[in-house]
Length: 316
Image (cartoon, rainbow, N blue to C red; front, top):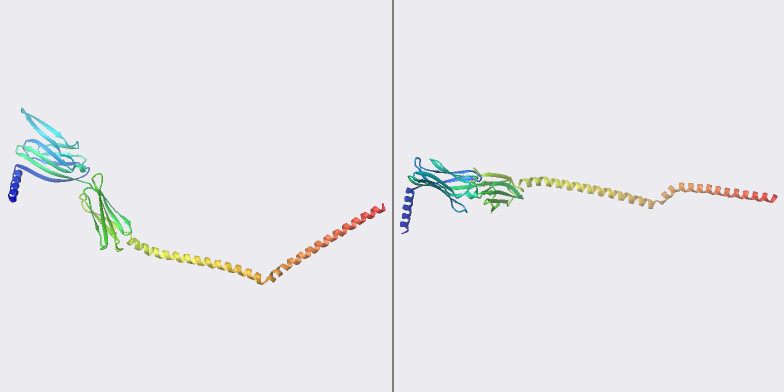
């Protein structure tokens, strides 16, 4: 029973294809481009009607049509645009085009062109894909780790690390932005310090070839160089500080020793100080004796003068 139903479906499909000629295509563009979709008809046949049925993502279906109407031998053309002012249909004797200006992500979807002429109906189905090229970068995030980013792409980019290390860890986060683009972040972490460089390969349909981002991993080559430079420098600094402290301590000890020697000499040899003070003492005694002699002479002279005045008073 099921095989019979499949056979009937296949016969109906073949009959439909024979009666209605169907063509299909895929169109890939970048966001912001002007897109032209072609719907070719058979040459030499008078066009009766053409209709574009637009089925975009997350939007209802709309149509852009052209119709030739004949009334009483009068031919008139009618056009209709129920989609957007950015869409315009152009009619030619050989082909019908639909132009989309300033394409956006919302324009992606299925565009079906239906042409009716003397030979019947022709369908052209075009799948429109709108790409957004992501911004890519690579940066270190810490010792022995790096981060690769593909920001704002559509569809989401694929990130792959080219590494020779067997002991590594890769984590990935994906977030959808407000404009329907996707950001992918991948973090690469080394478990052992045995690698100097790594490469992040970014794959996206908007890139003609993968974008390779190279980075020297912090904590590998830099850390080794830093180790060989920093350790000897630290040893030299420690030795210099030790020498300075030892030298200052030796000088301080010598000064203290000299002071203690002077004090002990003064305590052990007091005669030296007495001998040094004896000249000053003898000089002081001589000065005092001279002063005393002068004072006694002055007093004696004063007494004599007073006696003389007293005698004079008696004679008068």
